Amino acid sequence: MKHFLRQQLARYADRQGELEFLLSREDIMKDMEQFLKLSREHTDVAAVAGRWSRYQQRESDLAGAQEMMTDPDMAEMAEEEIASATAELAQLETELQRMLLPKDPDDARPAFVEIRAGTGGDESALFAADLARMYTRYCDAKGLRTEIMSASESELGGYKEVVLRMEGSTSTSAGTCGAYGMLKFESGGHRVQRVPATETQGRIHTSACTIAVLAEQDEVEAAKINPSDLRIDTYRASGAGGQHINKTDSAVRITHIPTGIVAECQDGRSQHSNKAQALKVLTARIHEKDRSERAAKDAAERKSLVGSGDRSDRIRTYNFPQGRLTDHRINLTLYKLLNIMEGDMDDVVEALQAYEAAQQLAALENNLN
Image (cartoon, rainbow, N blue to C red; front, side, top):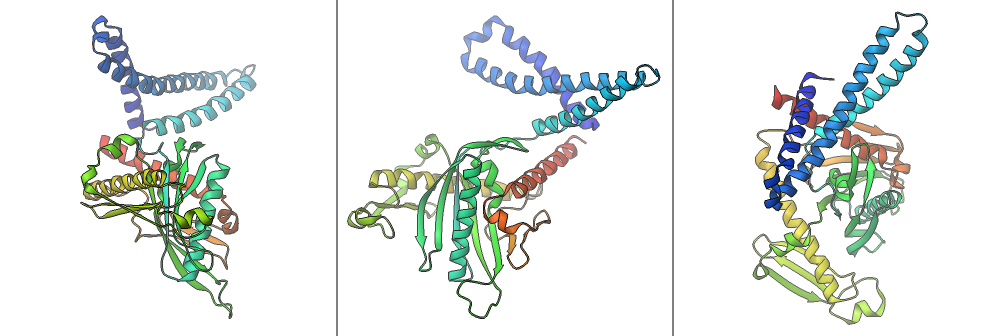
């Protein structure tokens, strides 16, 4: 294990002792807010310190087994212990590295996935529908719930624009995370190369969609928005939905006047539910705008992790004739495109999470040097 990691882990062990002393003081219970703050920190610190203690114990076991190798009668037992300790140390080191990385507080949140058709006309809209299906199937396989918040359909059955909401959590190589933590690296430009269904001469066309993944904010964030900054319009919903959707002005469009950000929802059964859903999307978009502006300010100090996520960035190409997916940010190429389009996205998602973790670890090391 690298020296800078050992330094960091030793600090956790020291901090655990400090917190246990502070929590044992009689006067701490007089300040419940401080007590809860220290208790939460102690829980996090103790988890890291516990794994670090186990790592040190297995290092000691490994050293003892290596000494035993000089005794012919103990050599076979020593070999087994060396193999066991070496494997566990590698696993523990990976766990500890992940524990030390800064956590994105939004990773546990539900996500809005906004997919918009770009260049390519009808083919782009069909590709948008294919992407929506891919994400829906992936989330279904992971046990996440998916719903369509709003959709603007094209004539051929695709989407000019569709907003999906994903909720739930699952285990990945980066630990347990929510829908946003799983899908946040999907933001950007997605390019497809294939023969469109409307192409009569078999020529390959290139079209594109843009995706934005937003973290859903809680009601506290929504409450911070000044109601006087909002313009709320109602209108008659269009599209599939039967007689009800065409007879009432249940669709809602909310505009945040200071920023010009707009959100709308028409898929609910009532104006009230559509207004609540649209406000959630609007809050997420405002939060993402603030987040992007902060990231831009930080760009001079450090590189963005796995691209900026800006919709103008071309992050990925889906080449159907070759059955190839290429993620340009991390130079990842997979020849299993049809499986991926059916929702088998684990290799893509985990590669992006691993790349982010490696970048964060390198930044942590540079900050300590």
